[in-house]
Amino acid sequence: MKRFIQNIKNIWKVEELRQRIILTLSLILVYRIGSFIILPGVNYTALSAAQEAGGQNMIETLLSLFSGGGFTNASIMALGIMPYISASIIMQLLGIAVPAVQKMQQEGESGRKRINSYTRILTIVICALQAPTYLTLYVESKGALPEGAGTFWWMQSITVLVAGAMFAVWLGERITDKGVGNGISLLITVGILARLPEAFMSEIGISIDSGNLIKIVLEIFMFVVVVLATVLIVQGVRRVPLNTAKRVVGARSPEGQGARSYLPIKVNASGVMPIIFAQAIMTLPVMLFASGSGFLARNFSDIYGFGYNLVLAVLIIVFTYFYTAIMINPRKIADDLKRSGAFIPGVRPGEETAEYVDSLVSRITFPGSLFLAFVAVIPALANLAGVNDAFAMFFGGTSMLIMVGVVLDTLQQIESYLLNRHMDGLMEGTRVKGRKTQELSGM
Image 1: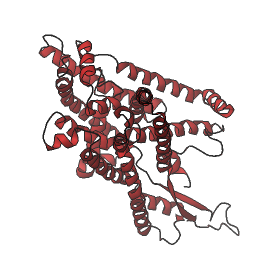
Image 2: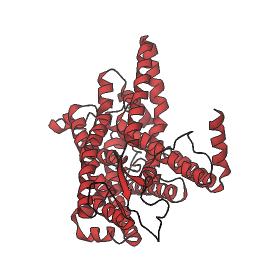
Image 3: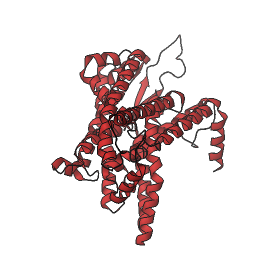
Image 4: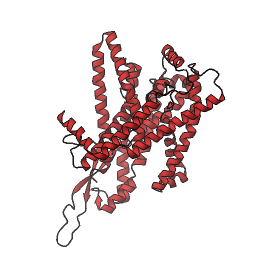
């Protein structure tokens, strides 16, 4: 406890870090306030009454989770950050298939800015399509439309929803640039964490009412086990040994030459993005078929159903490989090693090293993608075991993976500031490992 208090003091001593944390918390507060501001004219009393009478279906609960409650509140930020995620997915896919986008990706900072501009434009288009669908399928179906709602109200509400989603994107970008980083992911995490206390207390209430206190103890134990397992897979690294060729200067070798270092390859190099991507894709069929009665409606309207979780698991595996291929470029790694005079023992520099790294990444990514897919379907298993719907979402799945990944990355960012000022890290005897730490260690 004493060390924890000292770490908090150290964080507060670093002026730049203190300002970034304060700015991040302030922007998060603005985002949370926005999720409670109701759309102009919406009858919130009728909306609440409809929710209490009929409850929330699975899709409403899921979308509310990722918007921090803004979806079910019919707030100005009801669409949340997911339209931007969907636009990012589309631009990533275009980067593979469209040469013009590939060229922009290779143009460095200027190309990145152009891609970001196109992503924002695409986000507006997606929001403009989702906003009337949301007003029709959710607000109007709950009987919460204002009396005599005409064209002006519909245009006004669509504009407000689009503006609210873009404002959320702006907040996330400001957190990334001026705050502690991971702005978009951090907003999603805050929205998830905001629902956790209510879900947990609901589960405790059900256990107390049924007189089964052992159940809640077992659930807490399994929750901790899932968290630990998720941390292990997020932190897992395969260290490939590297040798540095000795260079003789005069009659002696410079100190440090010929030493062994390591090339770190993460088991989960793609981080939380495959989960976010897969979940964003899955919201589309759920919204389209949730109110129907056909085959797709039966299999995709229940987020704890077999069909939904099977497709989700497959998408996570596919996106894990896809995003890993974007994050790790074996040919670039081989070129960097060759220029620095380092080599993998038993592997020739150049093309052979690139092929070796590529095969190694593929083998490591496979079990990592399977684990991510398994964790993603744990809520369905927890629901079958009797955990209530609200708490089952946090028992694993997308919520758990996003929370663990983003929290670790944020802690790593904070620890980097402390270590750069020659202060102790957040943990005694070790370091918090985020994506940047593991990419740089051993190089």
